[in-house]
Every structure is written in structure tokens, then in C-alpha cells.
Length: 593
Image 1: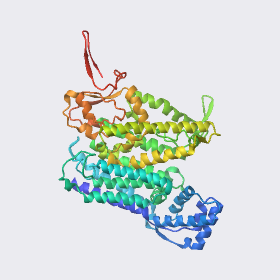
Image 2 (image 1 turned 90 degrees about the vertical axis):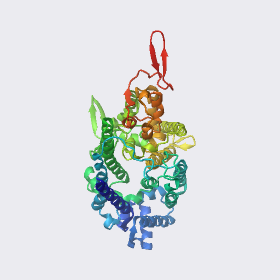
Image 3 (image 1 turned 60 degrees about the vertical axis):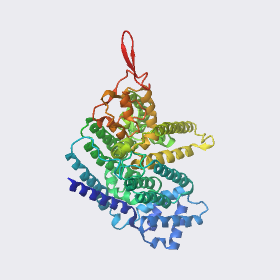
């Protein structure tokens, strides 16, 4: 069994190296035909062709994606020097992606070979590493999660450093295009320092997450890899063109277009699904003693693979509007923007329903509205926020599968809880404000500005800071650093909205039997939402915290059956009372919460 796990790990590491190297190691050569095909503006194209001929750029071969991109940027700069109307920076960024992708040649330009040697081989290695655990006894074991360099997490000070780097890089890059190399040097410096200041310096003593003196450097290395992936995907997609090229054959097969080209967002969606599948198998193996976890994991995999990935692509193939049918506002923060509404209204196949003529796109828009204002509040009232956050949501699905090894790293302190309440409801308020502003200007086209800011600026800032930096770079990249639900705890506006309903007007709660609690702390350790479950269990107090996503892992790891997920409305008017009290009168005895 051990030999099989080692084999799986070796295969996975090999595939990860191939995948990483394939991003950089490819040959590129720009041709005039390629430039002509992908530069739409005639004036800009003529200026670029002229500069390329004068400098001999068409005759040059580049050995890496990075050097080719650097050369292209220089070519655009020189062309702009001779143009009265300069090519804007955002337009150059768009041009770089197709030019880099379709100029690829060499061994790493073989899409099929690289696809199987990297992504699929990595998935196979992961499964070979995971499946031998089926031979172990089911149930949660003391596996040293706070001692292992990959799952130990990081101290408060190092968390602050990483967050500061992420925020600083985001702010500076948005204004000055901060060089990516500075970011790399900063995080590599932190890792080298932590390896040097090893855990042995502290006698190998066990310490809880967020208070450890030495951090888990292996987990930090993986976190940096994830963060870097998201930074490249969101802000520098032209560096990942070799990865998108791997997926062209698969994308062409499902799109029905033999000349179609996969985008970096299709790459993200495909990797998202592959990772969730492999780590979903791990989740099922680990929690196979608990039926709730098996069904819940199957549910998030179904909704991610079907509703988020395959069905939208099938809709496009059928010439219908693209839509993730499970993505609700305000998580889908741009659903009510002008571009989004126009992409639905009157689009797709015309239908006649009950004598009323409509279109598939219009029905999709109506479904999105119904999902926001009917389905979400009603389902949350009946089942709590778990129906979405733990059974349907793709963000939650990735957190529960890829992020499960790091769930114990969530900060259980009161300080974190206070910050969580202010930040997540602040993001919710921003999302609501942005949507109101966008809708006002949609119905009043003459109103292009809202106060001193344009609606385009407001939407762009929200998309950059919340949609990209918070949900992607920090929300997922920080799994090995701060736990798997950083985005869900602190940033997701839909989680904030569902939490308000759950806390005050929902039938869902986790009931506790304090008399059976042995204070082992398993429940609090494995709570990904930073809830000190043991404190509630010791008091015999039901858990109705707005942050609870009802994942049920606290119940699954409890050795005494103290915790139980229930739906009931008996205490809905007084569910947020701090402590249970017993009231005795002459006629009856009541327990109030």
C-alpha cells in the first residue's frame, strides 16, 4: 500500500513539473499572416507590420513564451511611437493572447501529448495516491495535521505579511503595472526564510493553527503555486496560452467547431472540474463512514460538472446564450449589468409559451431573477444556507474537495469572528450598491455617471478587488495558508445574504447534546468556518451561526454523536438567544433558547 502511494505521488509530481514547464518552454515565431489575422484595426496593423519588417521581428525565433511576450510588448511600444492614436494598453493585452497562442511550435506545442502527460497523468497519479486509503479503517484519526509541514498553516504574523503583499500588489499593479517578478521575489523570500527557521528550532512541540511559531513551509509553497496560477489566469492570461492549447482538441469536440480555440476561462473550468473530481474521490474515501458526506460530495460534483461546466457549453453549441444555471446573484455580481441583460433578452431560439412569444434567453433571465428572489430565500428558510453553500455552489465544492486538507486552519478566535461579520456584510453592501447603480443607469441610458464615478468604473473596481483578488487569488490561493473557506467566510456576498436569513428566519440548526460531550475538540478543529463548535456543545446550545454552511463534518468527526443537523421551526422566534435556560412553573417545564 505504501509503495502504491509513493508511486502515485511520483507520477503526480512528474505531471505537475511537465504542466508547469509547458507554460514557458515552447518555441514562438510571429508571421505577417498571423499579425494580419488577429489585429483588427487596419492602422494599428500597418504600423506593427512596418516596425516588424524594419526590426526583423518576423525572422526571429523565441525559445520561451516569456521572451516572446516581452518582444511583442516592445513591438507594440515601437509601433505606438509612430501612431497619432495610440493602441491602448487594454487592447494590447487582448492582442497578446492570440498572438502568443497561435505562434506556438516545438515539442511543447503538441497539444495532445502535453494534455495526457500533464493534466490526465496528474489526475491518475492523484487517484493512485488516494485509493489505497480504502484499505484503512474508516473514520477520523489523529494524523498530526498541526505538525505536518504541508497542513500546519502559518502564524498570524506570516498571514499578515501574505495579505499585505496581496493587497499591495493588487493596488500598485492596478495603477503602475507592478512587475510580476517583484511578487515572486517576495514570496520566495518568505519560503526560504521559513525553511531556514525550521520547526526543529522549537523542539517540534505541537501548537494550534494560527499560533504556531514556525509555519508549514510546504503548505506555503503550494499556496504560492496556487496564488501564482490565479494571478496569471486573471491578470496575465497571455502567459498561459500553452495550457489553453492543450485543451483545444477537447474544446473543439464539445463545441462542434473543428477550428474553435479554448480560452483561459475554459482552461480554468476544465481544471476546476478535474481537481474537484480527484479530490472529491479523496473526500469520499476519507468520510466514507458518513452517508451525509458521501451524498453531499456527490451533489457538489454533479452541479459543478453539469450545471457549471457541461450544460453552458452545450447551450452555446445549440446557439443558445451561455449561462451557469445555478449561479445566483450577488455571487454572480454582474448578472444585472447592461451587457448581461442584453445577452439574454430576445436571444436564442424563439418559443411560444401559452400564446406568448418569448426566447430561451429571456427565460434564462427570468430564471436568474426567480433564483435570486424566490428560490434562494425559500430554500434557505427551509434548509439553511447549506443547500447552496455545501450542496450546490462551485466555490464551496472546490473548498470542500481541494481545500479539505486545510479546513483545520480556519481561525477560531473572536478577533476573526468580529472581522468576518464586518467584512462579509461590507462586501454584500457593495454588491447591492453596485447592482442598484448599474440598474439605474440601465433604465436611464442618459445617466452614464453616478456621482463622481461612472458605472463602468464602479463595476470594474468591484470586479478587480472582489471578483478577482478576493474570490480567486486570496480566496483559493490561501487554502494552505488560512483555511479552505477564506472567501466563503469573509468575502462571498451571497454567503452573507444567506447567513442573514439562516440566523434569524431559517428552520436549520445544529442541535447539541452537551451531556455527551467529552471536550475532545474534534468538532472545532475540523470546522472550516472558524466556529468554536465545542464551546456550543459544552453548553448544550444549538448552533445557528450565520457563517455555518452545514457541511456536517463536525458531526461526522464527533466520537459521541453529540451534534446533529436538523430542520425545525420551534425556536425560530428566539433562535439567536445566547444560552439555553430552563423555565419551571406550576403547570409545565420549558427549555428556551
